[in-house]
Image (cartoon, rainbow, N blue to C red; front, side, top):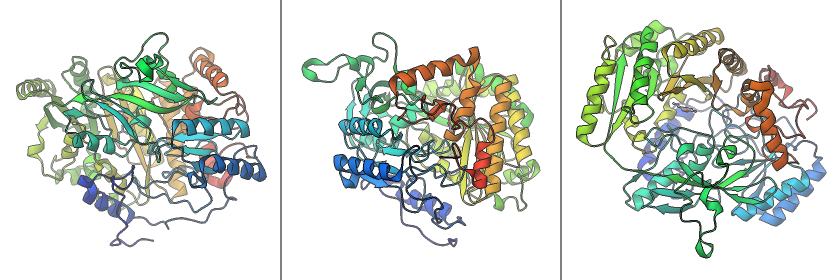
Length: 609
Ligand code: EUG
């Protein structure tokens, strides 16, 4: 158990490690890590109960040892690590690649057998051929920071994690004229941002809320950021992919050979090229390992972040109705966030216990009391927006926006200069102008040993739909005893209604309730016609099964592709609910209460595995 004043080793710097933190954030990183880990009530690691390393399915220990020996011979001993040591959850910038740091089942339930570190595209091809030969599933990760969605955990325990980032982390090109880049899987937002600053280019990257993740990995999981280039997949241009049979593919203009063997000069300029646009099937799938990706960069521009507060909870649908036309007209320059005032408490990085001493969700009245003494005051919803362009243009946009929201009684606009330096809005100024930061981690201080799980439905940007989903989410959070942290990322026609379920990793009871809450939210919203854009690996089957129109036509289509590309079923079986033939209908699918039962010690997968 850590005492509250203990200090932990500082996170690695970006200059010493590809996944490290830039110098400009070093002090913040130390503070953030110490603040979070000093509240831990868990030992750094617990004894493991299963035999280690955990074996891949249908593989004896002798076969596994033989196969791993072969892999070590090809790649070198130092590039193949057995997962036979204690499991350490670590911290955001020093996270494990052996399991999900934010485990929702037991920590040991989703573990790899080994981790392999390819250094080249050819080595990725070699690993895939090795996996086919031994019928051992492999699970690729870029940097593994898919937090709240499974992190680095393979869906099939005992899979070999292919950690692409450690040795494949080059920025292969930055084309200042085309305003684009070409990156490998291990390039973080931090790294790309720092390189562009070093070259003094007038270009922005687009970063999600936290900047440690992989530019490539986030885009192919359809992550979101907050500049005008915030739809990451929509702004990628060109992929290079290792297929499950080991063949190499370039999509888009990259399929046309450049002169004298060079990369095609328009690979990062035109997305579809000629013929079916194939990139989509390599996002949120298990059809290939993306080893290179092109990405557009935004020419820098003026920007002004602001927040608008609304006093009453009931104004929620009216706020959504005002956002819709503003977003469709592109008066709103980015994807703004609408948050609830509870997050004004959480983003102070103080624990819930500082506001509420008894157990159970913090009552609305208590939130009200504490919000009164915070900078935004006793309000309800808080809209975080940013406008772009020159000063005159921003000023006219802000006038329009203030007038539109002014219809709601008591709406009040504030600029960063109206708020103290520690207020969360200042971190939005960075994120919304493409500067990657760490601030969003602060709400993990809410409970000890905090982990979180995202529930991420897509909802029409319409008051009545927003209210329908909100009511389900509110009711089920109350039923399972969790505080509700909604962050709505609102576009003109749909919004990502993101809920952070924050739970104590040390409490099996909280995990069980979080899993049940997730299961019921998926089912209840689906019954009303709403579906998730992304989910934790353990809920992938459940979410995929909601997309069942036409007697599961979409899943049958995905399975047809999967079986054609990956007949041995070696690549990330079960990711996004897509199971290769070898695994289908054999007890791997999780469509009911299996996650909750895993917490009784039953494990994940068929009982024999
Ligand atoms: C957030 C946004 C997401 C997501 C997970 C988290 C924001 C958290 C828009 O997508 O998938 C503050």
